[in-house]
Image (tube, rainbow, N blue to C red; front, side, top):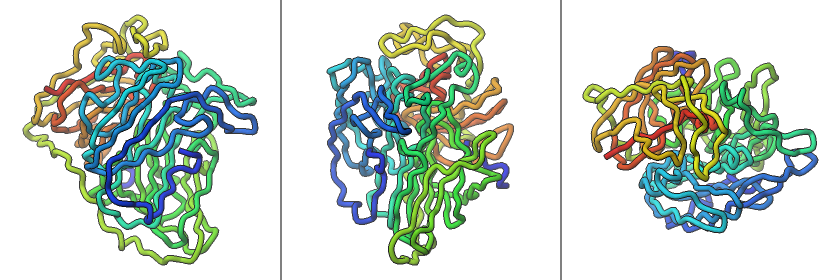
Amino acid sequence: MKRRDFLLGTAATAGVMGAASWGAARSTEQQLTIQTARFAFREKPTDGLVSLSPDAPPPVIYGTQGNPMRLRVANGTEDYTAMHWHGLRIANAMDGVPYLTQMPIAGGESFEYEFTPPDAGTYWYHPHCMTMAQMAHGLTGVMVIREAEDPGFDGDQVINLRDFRLDGNGAFLSYYSARGAARGGTHGNVLTANWLRAPVYDHPAGGLVRLRIVNTDTTRIYKLHLSTAQARIIAWDGHPVEIDVPLPSATEPLLVGPGQRVDFALRMPASEGQTADLLAELPGQPTRTMAKLRSVGTNLARNMAELKPLPANPISRPDPTNAEVLDFVFGWTPEGGPPNDGYCGSLGYSFWSINRTPWAGDAAKGTGPLATLERGKSYVLRLRNESPNLHPIHLHGLAFIPIRSNLRTLPPLVTDTMLLLKDEVAEIALVADNPGDWAFHCHVIEHQKTGLAGYIRVT
């Protein structure tokens, strides 16, 4: 595979974890309260944020593969809400999609999510009710599901990438626009990593660090690379990479769309004070430093060859040669009034559609599935992008493998989110092994909330 063909499509310091903190496997129980927050992105604090803390970003939630988790989500705001665990293949009733898997959580109420994650890896969480408003105001957090055995890193660093739309006084600007929703989305103007601007995190000099990068933004597609060549990609969208993947560079950066994740293994510089940097290429701007990992202490002199491959997750492997093919067309809507979103918010108009029918809204009655899949069978979904905009298409509850495209060579990496390029027709293969009604939508939230959404039923 040629490099040019490769386009994959807490507290402020949360996500720093050393090897000593791995600990024995055990069940996780946690109380999470959605609440208003205040935080200083610039000199003047920003009010009106939404988080799980009054003065910090949502924390990294840790669990262990195969161990039960019980997360009680209380709603301390006046708006309705619900929490989705992006990328986790869990029971449908725990997926957190209002009207599809549960009713919205009203202010003062709570919902207890109980599940056992079958897969290790890097995942994240966000609301699926009042989605645009609550996500744009900060309610996006990372979830790390540890492997049963310590993979041998000296450090573990989470980077939650997101931007915010703020004026010069730190107040929120409008977080969406009709113009943005009808095109590529409305971008923020304050780019952050863990809500900080170019934060610096300390890790052992010469040590091996697992760098987990998560794009939880509502719109922005990042073009990322590292300042060091002492690294390799070890996981994509939570799942271990089983092939050699080219290391991205400034001229050939890695595209990471909203909802997507990438894990690097990297060797820290040998000398104290030196850094390994996460860099982003932005249109019309100099290379942006998103975060720095700084070497501290005596050189551990670790070698990348010491790391064993991450153990594979228990994914059912599809048989594309014996699979039913289903077509999905993503594009603008030929017609459509304002969606009926019940308690979960509407932008007031429809611009987008799947199979030329806009999503009628979360609470709309009589809206059937886009397709019904038979449990245990293999399917190929042919995804056609008829628009000039990029769409990160996310499927809840199931994992799939890209197999071909009319524009590029697709590495066969297990994933849950496919970044469709302009005019691309891509085919993905899956086994329908998790019963339920699974949301299927673009993760540019303005697109999702203006019609580019639906669900797939597995029976």
